[in-house]
Structures are given as C-alpha cells and as structure tokens.
Image (cartoon, rainbow over all chains, first blue to last red; front, top):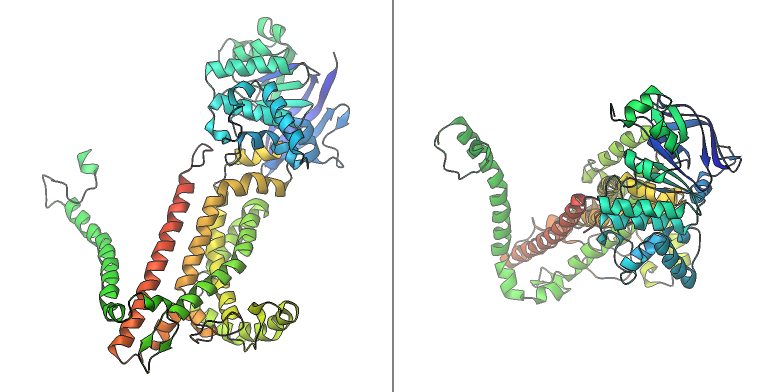
Length: 252
Length: 319
C-alpha cells in the first residue's frame, strides 16, 4: 500500500492550548481513512491541518510535517493557497455561496484559477455535478440559487464544487452530521465511488459510517492518536482498551 | 404568563399595582416620542400651507429664490442637497468599504477593537467644529492644492470649470464625506462581521486568497447590508446642516461646476429663518423643511429595512 499523505510529529495549538500531540499517521492513496473520537478530541483540527485550514483561525498554529507525495506542505516556500487547491475540503455544514447560482457555485474554484472559457466551464459543471451524483436532480435548474436546494443536495453541490478544481485529496469534516439518513447514504455511496480517483479522509461522529465506508480508521482521544489500523481490525479486535470502550459506546 | 405580557391596555386585576404604574410611565415616554414626531410632521405641513397654496408643485421646479419680490422656488436647494450628498457618498463609500474590510478581515486582532472605537468616535465630533476646520484648513487646501490639478487635467469636463474660491460644492461634498465615513464604515463593518465563518472557509478551501475570499464570499453575502449602510450615510449627509453651511458658499444657483458655491435645504433654513419677515417667506422655508423631512424619512426607513433584513438572515439563506 502506498501512502498519499504521511504525517510526522504533528502538533497543533489554539493560543496556548495544545489540541494535537505528536500525531504520526499515514493516509493511504485511493483509500478512505476515517477519523473517529469523542467531541473535542482534535479530529477536526487534525483534518484541517492537512490542507492548512487550521491556521486561518486566529491564534491557531501547527508544527510538524505533513508530507503529500513526499513534499512537506508546511515548508516555508509552500503557498497554502496552492495546497488548498490540491486538497479539497467538504465541511460539516453545507456552505454553498448563497448569492451564486448552482452553476457558479460549481465553477467558483475554477474561476478563481482564471478559467474563463464558457464551454470548458459548462463541461466542468456537468462533469462535476455528475461525479457528485447531483446532475440529474439539478440539470434543469443550473441558474437557480445554490441555497434553493435541500440540505443533502447542498452538500453534494459542495462536493461538486470541491471536485471541480480536480484535487488529489478530499477532506470530509463530518459531512453528514446535518443530513437525514437518505442523504447520508447517498453521500456514503458517493465517497465509495470517489475513492477510485481520490484519496479521502473523513472525520465522523457516526461509527457505523466509519465502519461502512472506510478502509482505515484512526481513533483520537484528548488530542492523541490512540489507535490506527484497518477498519475491520479496529472495530472487531481493537488493541487498546479505550478504543473498545468508545466503539461499544461506553463513553463519547 | 399573563403578568409577564407587557401590554399597555391589558385588563389587569390589580390596576393600581406598581407594575401598572411603571408600565404606564415608561409607556407614556415611548408614546411621547411618537406623538412628538407626529406633531412635528403636522406642524410643518400646516405651516407650509401658504407656500403650497401659492406655488403649488412649481415650488419644486422653480429656481428663483427672490425674497424681495416674494418668488420662492426650492430647486436650487434640492439640487444642492442631493448633489452634495451624492458627491459625499462618491468619496465616502470607497473609503468606508476599505475601512470596514480592513477592520473585519485583515487588521490584527489586537487592533480591531481600538480602531473601530476611534472611527466611531469621529462621528461624535460636533459638526460646527468640523465646519470651522473646513473653513480654515480644508477650503484653502482644496482651493490651492486640489482644484488647480483638477482644472488642469480634467478641466474639459464642465464639472471642473470656472473660478474656485474655496467655498464650493466640492468643499461641501468633501466635508460631508468626512462626516459620513464613520457611520457608513462602522455599520458596514458590523454587517461584514455577520458573514458566517463557514462562508469564508468555503472560499479558502477552494484555494482563494484573502482578497478573493472577500470578493466571492464576504462582499456578496453582505451586499444588501452594505447598501443599507451607504443609505444611512446618505441620510446623514442630507440632513447635515452646520458644517456644510459653513463651507458650501450659500448661493442659491444651479451650476454644473463643482467649483461654484451652492446651497442646501438645511443651510437655507438655518441661515434665513431669522430674517424671514413676510408670511410667505417663512412658509416657503417651512415647506423646504417639510420636503427635507420627507426625503430623510424615506431614505432612513429604506436603509433600516435593508439592514434588518440582512441581520435576520440565518442558515446561509439570503432572502
């Protein structure tokens, strides 16, 4: 197995409060890696360190290495803007741009990149919406506002928006926590399709979801990585006592 | 529950309780303001009756202001008020937006609160002081340093032709801009701060730079509120009296050139009310006041509605 991302000795802080301690982990290429753990365990912070979104919060900082294809994204000569184009992100709450149409939402990232050709933009709109399994539902309403859609559709629109810039990795930060079960299962199916082409990291509160979609699972507790391994092993034969306690619902 | 309901006319079993008296007293205070506003409106309407009867609608379109022959038209003042206010906005809006964006998006955390406070303090400077500064510093500065290059390089435009003596429409507009910037920038800043973090993060995660995030996520989300802030500033400019009276030149004529003196509705009332001897003269000034009140009420109400609409927005849905 080949690692797309290798994290070495990652620490993160909000002001003086350290929220991640010495995380070492490898993210498999074309796999789905799930991050689980109770609220406040640092799993969202961890995933936000992978595309340098952590540092946009005031007083937040990180140290350590995050190697993407053997290149440290925390190197001083790396532009975080460039990193965020290569490593897309889908957030907990669907956040389409409310003043933009569905089409403009999808190609927002491409337009930032300077792409103006309307034909290419239209092709990319269609392709991205198809990849996000939303095309059939919105193909006649591309000029409608992005927020006219349901929550689940909005989240798939956000996935399409992330896919349009053709990233290598997609980070999902609890993408289904605001969605109903049907929308959730659509997004899970979608992730399974997407992993053919992309490397996926998903933070989730929902253990069944981690068990259903992921190949590897990491369990975080109090900012530390407790256990990391194949999803089957983590859920069936956890090595650590606290992992087992969390999985069978003794806390968290 | 019933006791908690604050209703002035409720049927209470204890009419003379402390609560009732308290309610009645503060209720009267609140009502007093409404009554006062209504009476003001009514008084202006009644007292301007003579002028309205004499000149009718032509009052709005006549540009003669001749107290000797008792011919009065409000057009030069309406023109002066609207043009000086528009000019003020033209100057103030870019500055205010820049200030608001800097304070909400770019300034270091530690600077944000003190800077916003200082800018809001600017709004508290008495306008007569700004007017004095306008007469002694700003007007000579504009006459000596701003007007010459404007007439040299843009002199082909009628806007920048003719002699410039310092007291002019341009000076009035600049003074008004200075008075509008604090309110427009602080309301814009508040509006921009209501843009949810997830909108900024959506743009950043797509690989937007700081400026691009402001352009595609922050400004579109807050545009109606910013528009409201601009209109609030417009309302302030329209009603402003003292400072603008001191620098605009007070000459009731309509000129294409920003270099020539002008006159505003508020200024003419302030300047001429004491010397208005005939009934028609007084009545005409009052009608100008009535018009000014109507214009500012319309503009302020429109702005408030826009700002409220934006602040009510929830869950990423913009109505």
